[in-house]
Length: 138
Image 1 (tube, rainbow, N blue to C red):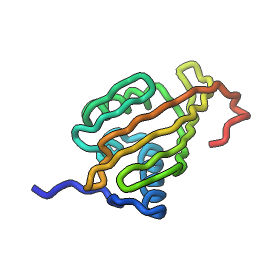
Image 2 (cartoon, one colour):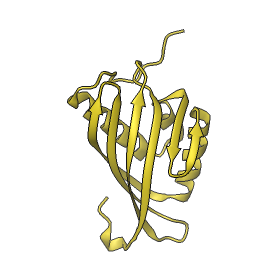
Image 3 (cartoon, helix red, strand yellow):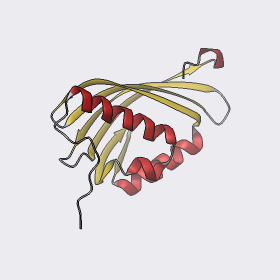
Image 4 (cartoon, rainbow, N blue to C red):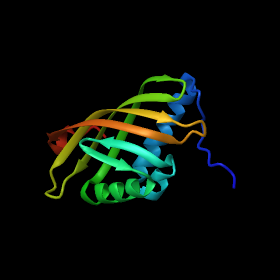
């Protein structure tokens, strides 16, 4: 069986780290949990806010529930720092909750990749800010 790979592979350069961040932004904006999950190892470990998520199956379940609740979701990620097989990003996203109110979420993520370019660890710290529709940026 051929080993799964997700390009670009570490060690990262500034260019390949930026590419990896853009690929992640594009995948998350697709709101396709199966597609997004393919960027992670089978046994990936996440901390998302106060939730701990382990493995691709839990990633798919988490993202499915997330995007059922977060309507009109739009995300932007920016490279913050990188080294060898690690990338740090800052991000913001906007969505409407079940009541139709707009929320902007801000945060930072720390990513660690295996040699095949799959993310094995993702640690996200996120804060929410209610916004008026007129304050939307994304």
